[in-house]
Amino acid sequence: MPEILEEQILTGTTKTGAEVLTIQRFIFLLSDFHYQEFIKHLQEADAALPLKLAEAVKQTLPGFDSHAELCTKVYGSASDTDKKKFNQLSVHTFKLSRYLVCNYPDYLSHNINRIEHWVNTGNPKLALRTAKFMLDIAERIEDFRSQIWCLRFLASDAILNKETQASVKYGEELKKVLHTELVYTELQQDLRLVAMDENNPADATAYESKKAYYESFFEHTSSIVRVTAMYGYVSWVYHHNPKYFNDKRDLRVLKELEDKLQQFPHLAFPFMTNMYGNTAFIRLNAVAASLEDKERTKLYNDLEDYYRQVKFTSEYVRDGQLYLIAIECSRLVSTYYQHLHRSDYHTVIKPQDIKSIERKIKTCEGLLAIEAERKSNEIFLANLRMLYGAFYVMAGGEKNIRRGITELETLLTSYQQMSLKASTDSIFMVLAIAYFAVADYEKCLEVYKRYTKVKKNKNIYEGNDEKIYAYYYIAQWILTGREQYRIKLGNVIYRNGKENTTKSLLQLLDLLKIEVTE
Image 1 (cartoon, rainbow, N blue to C red):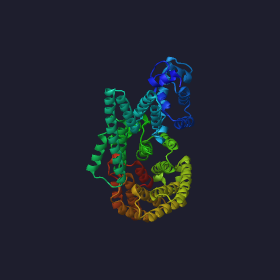
Image 2: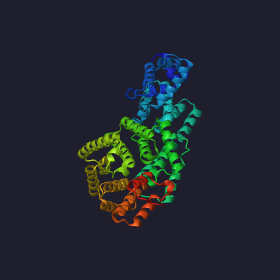
Image 3: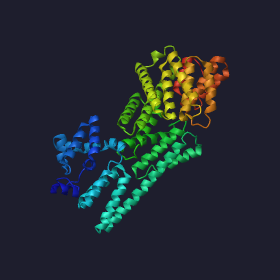
Image 4: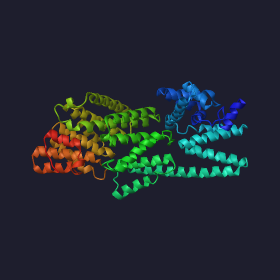
C-alpha cells in the first residue's frame, strides 16, 4: 500500500488532512458484496447523485479524496453553493443505507476479520484506525454487537500500549452500550410477550399501565430504544383500543414514530425486523379515514416500494403482500359499503376502484394457488381467504356478492376450530353488509346472533362492531316495522355523541330514508 494512502487510513484524514466524511467511512467499511448491493439499489432507485458520490468514494480507496475533490467529481466544481449541496448529498446518501441495514443489519461485521488479520500480520495501526471507523458507523446505526466488539478491541489495544486512561474510557463506554443493549433486549422480549397475548382484551388499568411502560423510554438516549418503545406503544393501542387512535396523545405518538423512522432510516434493527412495514400498515389501516387521498396514496406507494426492497425470505415478503392487500380491501369497504345495496352501485364506485378489485381478486387467486402447494400456515391462509371473499362482495352485483358470501361462510365453517384472531369481527361485518345488499334480511339477523356469541373475550374494533349492530337493527326495522328497532338503531348511531357519529352510517340511513334521533 502506498505510504500516503496508508497514512490517510492511519490518521483518518483526507489528502488535505481534513477528517474523513461519514459517507467515506461507510463505503470504506463495506465488503465487495455489500458495496455491490448498495450500488445496485441506488441504480434501481434512480438515485443518480448518490450513486455518483458512492462510486467516486470507492474509486480512491483505500485513500480518501478531500471534500473539495469529491464535490468537484460530483458537481463539477467546489463553489460555496456546490459545497452546500454536497454536504446535504453526503448526509442523504448515508440515509439511503436503509436498504442495506434492512436486509443486512450486520454489514459491518466482516471488518472484524479484517482487523484481526491486520493485527496478526503486523499492521496493528491500520487495524486500530479501521476499528475506530467501524465504531463510528456502528454508533450511528446503533449496531450494538459491532460497538461492543470495537470497544473491547480498543480497550485491549490501549492496555497493551500502556494507555490505561484510554482503556478505562473505552471500558466505561462499553458498560453503557451493554446496558443499552440489555434495555433494548428487554423491550424486544416485552413485544414478543404482548404479541403472544395480543388478542386478549386488557382492562383499563392494564391498558394504561402498559402505555406508561413504553412511555418511560420515550426520552432514552438511544434512538433505537426510543423508536422501539414508540412502536410498542402504537402496536399496543392498535390491538387493545377498539377505537384505535381516537386519543390525540396516541395519534401524536404514531406520528412521532413515523417521523423517527424517516429521520433514522439507517438504524440497525435485528435481522427480519419489520418495524417500518408494521407501522405503515397500522397508519393506513387504523387512521385511513382521516387521511386525504393524496396522502393515503403516497403512504400506500411508499409501503409497496418498501416491500419491493425487503429481501428476507419469501415467507416474510408474502406477509408484506398480505398487508398491502388488506389495506386496499379496508379502504374499499369503508368507502363503498353503504352503497352496496343500490341497484346503481356500479355508477357510484370509481372505475379505477373496479379495476383495483379485479386485480386484487386475481392476486388473491394466485396466492391461494401457491399457498395450497406450500401447505401454508392456517392463519395466513384464513386471512387471505377472508380478503378474497371481501373483494368479491365489494365487486357488487348479486352474483359477485353471493360468491363472496360463499367464500366467507366456507371460511367460518372450515376454521371454526381455529381462532381467527382479529379477523372475526371483520368477517361478520362483511357478511352483514353482503346479506343486506342482496336483501336477505333474515341472514343479517343470523349473522348478528352468531357474532354476539363468538365476540366474547376478543379484541373487537368498535367500527366493525357498530356496523354489525346497525345492520341488525336496520334489518329488523325492515322486516317488522317495529319502532323499538329504530330507537335502538339511533342508540347505536349516537352512542358516542352527535359529534362522533360515523358519517358513512348516516349516509346509509339517508339512502334508506330511515330517520333516527339521539
